[in-house]
Image (cartoon, rainbow, N blue to C red; front, side, top):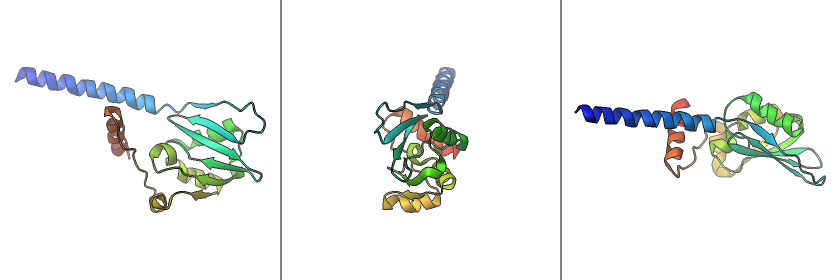
Length: 153
C-alpha cells in the first residue's frame, strides 16, 4: 500500500512539473516581427506568443487576420506598435477559425479598432457570445493545455 501511494505521488508530481513547464512555454508572449524587404509586400506576419497575426495592407488601411491567444490586451497593442500599424487603420478583422490561439483577443481587437469581424457563419454565434473553442488535442500536451484552459476560464 505504501509503495502504491509513493508511486501515485511521484506520478502526480511529474504531471504537475510537466504542466508548469508546458504552461510557461505556451504563455510566452514574445512578439517578433521581421519587416519584409520587399517594398511591395502587402502581408506583414507578426509572431505573437504561440500564434501568428497578420496585417494585410490595402489602399484604405489594413486587414487584421486573427488576434492571437487570450491574455493581456496591452500585448495586442504592442503587436500593432511593433508592426507600425495604427489600430484605427484596421478596416476589417478576419477570423480564420475558432481556436483560442486565433481569436483569443478578437473582442479587444474589435473594440480597439472599431472594425467589423468577418468569420465563418458557424462561428458568428460563438463570437457574439464570447465563446472560444479549444483546439482538438492531438497529444498529451494538447490534452493538458485544454484542461488548464478550462480550469482558468
